[in-house]
Length: 112
Image (tube, rainbow, N blue to C red; front, side):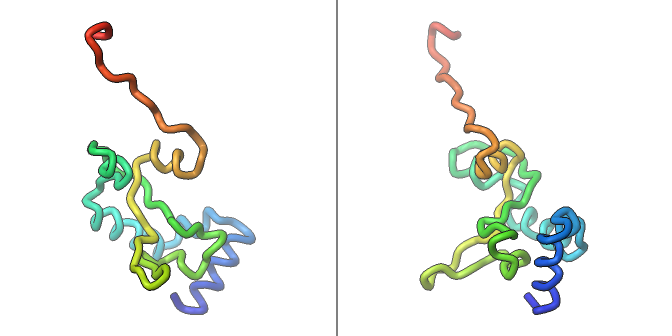
């Protein structure tokens, strides 16, 4: 990211974070990430199910790491990791702690 872009993100954090999420650069990058992940929720995929992704999540939160706000990848201890991942609405809320993961009871003969 350029210094100008980082300054813009910091200003959005201070004044109106919604402005970041309506910024053209973010919208283009968001679409690229969804395409990269084939519009599949990456958390559901790890759990063995398919759910359409509707959100792109910052692993490194924008407010804490404005310099990584437009970075798909980041380096951690020499390892390349994803910073932006596609998630469904429920998983995105779960990751942020807004809701607990849904635990479905297994289908048993009693419930059949």
